[in-house]
Image (tube, rainbow, N blue to C red; front, side):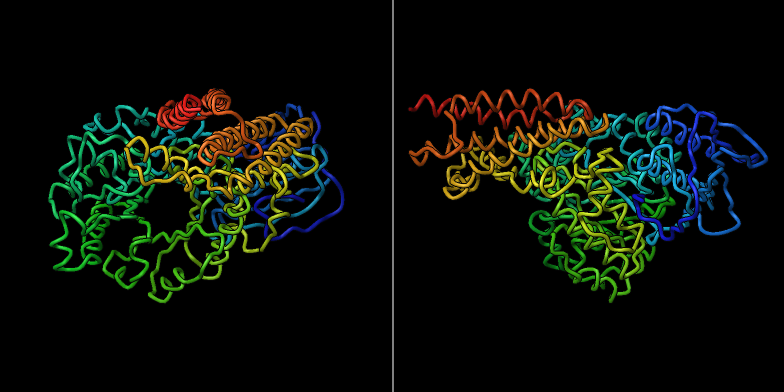
Length: 624
C-alpha cells in the first residue's frame, strides 16, 4: 500500500471494494460546496485513471457501491481524517475541510495503485508537523505561468502540503516600478488573486514572500532607487546573474528606505488572504560596508540589522499579519530574537546533504518559540535536480523538525543564475518534504522513490525515480552551472584572471567522456521505459532526456575549449564548430520546454550565455 505521506494507522480488513460503472460518489446532506469540490477531484481521478464515469449525488443515507464523503467537526483536528474501505462502501470522513480533502487524496493514490479493486482497510491519519510548505522561486529568471502555478498547487495538495510561497524580488507589476519589472513578464494582481482563491479550495495557505532587505538587485540598480542602495551603483553596469545573488542591500540609515519597503509590502500584501507575510531579510551581505558603515561601527552590525528587521516585523504586525523571516543572519546570535515580536517566525535554512543540528539547537536553547526548518530540493546548481542530495538534506532537516517539534517545514526550490533547471524535477524533492514532514516515521530513499515512481509517474515497475536512472543524472553532470556562468560573465566584463579551470580543469576533462557515455546510457533506459509510463510521466521522461542532452552539449563545448587550451583531444570531444552547433540546437529545444510552464520572462539571459559560448567556440575554430 503506497500512500504518500504514509498514514499513521492502517488496519487491513476482509474484502475488496470494486469501483464499477454503477458506483456513485455520495455527498451527505448538509455538506457545503467544498465537499462538492473534493467529490469532483475524486470523480476526475476515477475517470482519468480508470476510464469510468461515476456520478456525484447528495443523500441522507449510506448505500452500497457508494463512496460517501462527510465532515465531522466534533472530533479531531481540522487535518485529521478517517478512510473506511469495506466490500460494499467507502466512507471518507474529514474532521475539517482539509481532513476531507486529505482523505480523498489518499483514496486517489490507492486508485492509482490498485485500480478498480481497492483492498478493504481502515486508515486513520493526522500530521506530525502543523505547517508543511513549499516555496518556488519566480524572480531569478523563470516566471511561471498562472496555469503552471495552479498545477503546482494541485501537486502540493495531492501530497497534503498546506502552505505555498513563491519567492519574489521584483517580478510583480508594482504600481510605480515599471523601470524595475519592464523586461521580466511580471506576475499581475489578477493572477495572484486568482491563484490565492484557487489555493484556498485546496486548503493551501498562499503566503506572500517579498525580498525586503537584501536581494534587491533589480530595485536598487534602477535609476529611480539607486540612491537607496547600501553600496554605490553604476546604473550602466551590464546585467549580471552572479551579482544579482551577492549585492544590493537596502540602506537602512536612509528614512526613505523604510518608506519604500513598507509601501511595497503593503501593496503586495493586499493580494493575499494569508495571515502570514514572509519579509525574507536574508543574505544582507553589504550591510555596514557602505552608507551604513559609520552607524554599524557605532552600534554594531548586529544591532543595525535587528533594528531594521524589527521595524519591518512591527509594520507587518500593524497590518494584522504575522511576520516570517529567514534566520541566516541571526543564527549566530539567536538571543537577539528576543528583541523581535514573539509571534515572528524564524525560518532556519540549511541545504547541505550532511545536515547539522547546531542551528536548530541554538534556536531551541534560546527558547525561540516559532521556528520552521527549511531544506531544499537541490536544483539551483544543476540542469537536473540532484535527488539523492535532496533526500539526504530534506530527510535530515525533517528529522530535526520532529525532534525539536518545530511549527513548520518549508521546503525550498531556488532559481539561482537564471533558473535553468526544469521545474518538474523539483517535484521529487517536494514529495520528499511533504512525506517526511507529515509523518515522523523514517523511510529509506529507495522505498520513497518506489512510491513516487508508482503514484506520480504510474510506473508499474516502480523504478522511474531511482539512483541508477533519473536520480543519477545530476551526479553525472560534468560541468556545474555556476562556474559555467561565471566564466562567461567574467569574459564579457573583461576580467582576465578568471581561468577556464574553474569550469573544467584537465582532470575533469579526462573524466568527462566517460560521463557522457553514462548519460547516454541513462537516456536509452528512459526511452525504453516510455511504454511503462502514464502520459504525465512520458512528458517528464522526455524533459529528463532534453536536459541531459543539455548536459552533453555543454560538456562537449567545454571539452572543445579545454582541448584547444591543452593542445590535445579528450575522449568525447568534438570540433569547436560542431560543439557550437550542438549547443544552439539543444537550446532551441530547451526554449520549447521552458515555454510549456513559464512566461518568456528572462529566457533571453540564458540565451546570452549559450550563444556567447557558441561564438567563443567559433572564434576558436578561426584560430586553428
